[in-house]
Image (tube, rainbow, N blue to C red):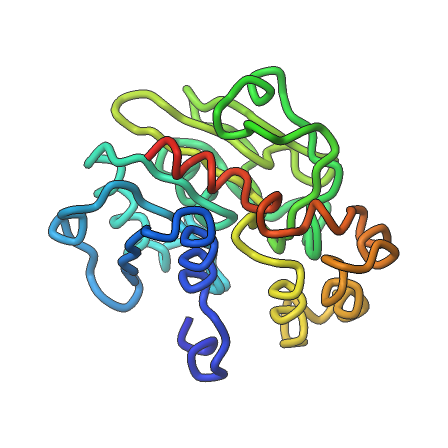
Length: 246
């Protein structure tokens, strides 16, 4: 987050705020930064729902370095607030609820999560209203959920990561989570890849197609998608459904 700010790039929280307000313009967003300032119960006063965003840190949600983030997540779950999470946010929930996460044996999934298929439960769950088998959504991740928490329900997966979406609704916790990033546009993924450092160095060849995939059918097809799937209204399906829940 600090590097994004220094380079005048949007943070994960900034992207989420834009996506939420695109679906519900009157939404009021308050941003908490547990790695910067201790998160307390007072931060939840007046809050109707919570988002666990993605993260640009190099460590996993089960690492010692993530202790502050896990402490914040515990407070949220103990408060019983409806919660949604993307990427690192899904992994945080899985860690807190007793699942296992780790690096995908297939390496990074970057650009678009392709050909995502719904489970039988996913086809009827409110989170996936409007989704159909074979959908694609922007993504960038190294880690994945490798064992679901007891009590969680698998909602969607693909050939790269069997857990692309899960829900958990028990013991007062109401969580929806995706491994992919419905809050990010394809050009936003391209912006991350342009960084060219570390985990992004292997994906430079995707930049040109990601920049134009929302309007160029050939570029979208090379990424495994269609332009209409990447437009904000369709891309943010899960967020719109969650806002209706909240």
